[in-house]
Length: 121
Ligand SMILES: [Zn+2]
Ligand SMILES: [Zn+2]
Image (cartoon, rainbow, N blue to C red; front, side):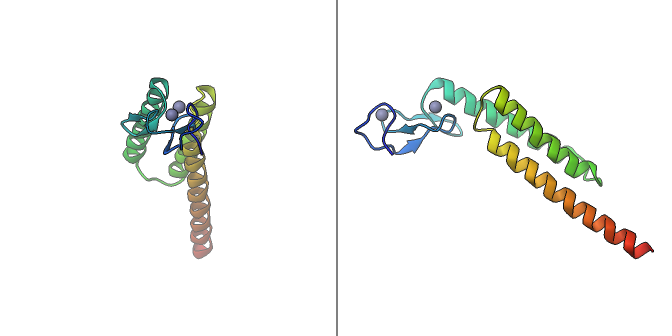
């Protein structure tokens, strides 16, 4: 991969927000990764804040029954919607991750629920 600005220079990093290849001269260091411009740094920082908030919120939740997986799924959906609306592409994989994690939790939960039901019969 070559730098998006300097066609003859090898890219040594990829912008975390827009995915462009960057050479040594073009890399702007964000607190949470490599970016190509101030605009992208802002996006990455914003996205990171969003994730931190969600994790704080998430760990504050009581791990009770169905609410737990459903919460994770809705977080994933929110991330996806937010990412698409605000064009923060870095957030979309996080949304997908949350979503599939939530679905996995839900399946596990429903399975154990069925087993409990079977046991009580
Ligand atoms: Zn960028
Ligand atoms: Zn460059």
